[in-house]
Length: 102
Image (cartoon, rainbow, N blue to C red):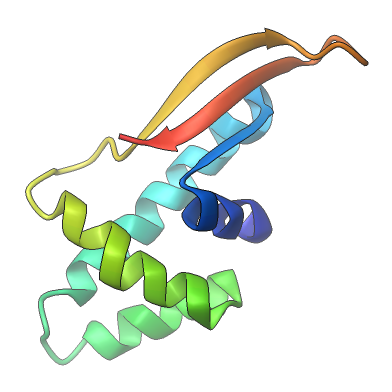
């Protein structure tokens, strides 16, 4: 899930199976909420950034999440992601979905 979350942050839109998209949504929204709280600049902001980095394992994606993605949602209280159903995949008929930032 960490790699999927990092891919979502990098591309801001990914296509995956519905099950993976539904499992990714709460994880990614919690990461965005931590990044928003890191914007406050209090004593715990460094701790929150380190928590995000320890989960993602990627400094560049952490920087992008904290400096570019999270400021867009400062006025929003949740629901940062949207899942759109695309239909079945041709090879194995798995239900596909697109997950993207709102």
